[in-house]
Length: 175
Image 1: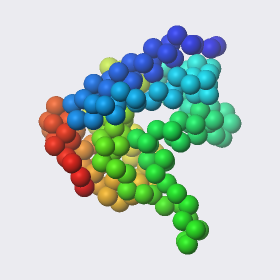
Image 2 (image 1 turned 30 degrees about the vertical axis):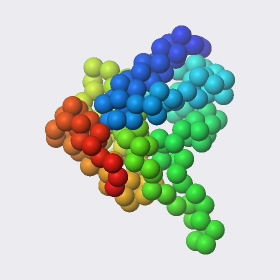
Image 3 (image 1 turned 180 degrees about the vertical axis):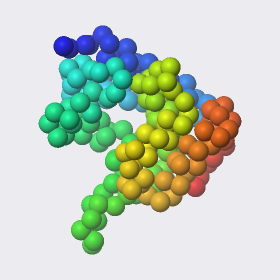
């Protein structure tokens, strides 16, 4: 069954939460444009068709077809996704991860917290942000410096809470 209203509400709640978190991290202007591509026909049609409410519609599309047109579209237009920062190195014939600019690492952190809160609802805990990251083996695809910083913030979220972590992130200017 197609769920345009439910999908719209979910992605809007997610986007607004990322904006709220991003303001606290000092990336106010940037997060105003967070995930606008989700409202494009390419992403929105698939989102409403495979809406689940507790997970990304893209994961359902991947499950069904082995890839997601919406995800390929999304990751190529949103710099807060580490996949945007991977390139093919012709010298080594391998994909390599580039070090992400600090402002996009901040947005990536906010995105992960918001997504976990939106999909986990009352089951949300700060641990779940880090657990999801580990379950997807994403650490293998990040630049070592980006990985180190993101993991530091996720562990800080668990140990010190959201308010203190966001305050620390806001103070971080480089890595």
